[in-house]
View (cartoon, rainbow, N blue to C red):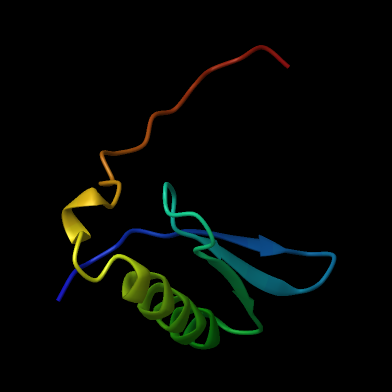
Length: 72
């Protein structure tokens, strides 16, 4: 079992949650609720992991987040 970190945003225009797993191409989806988004992300990750079946160590690893301050 592997654990991944997803970034989640709420899109007020579509009123949906958007989830992205950074560093893993194709690991993004939407859901009308957080529960639906989590289920969709799990399904997407399982499909992607099938392609990495023998090389799971080749997957990117989440390191962390940084806050960047800019003048607006």
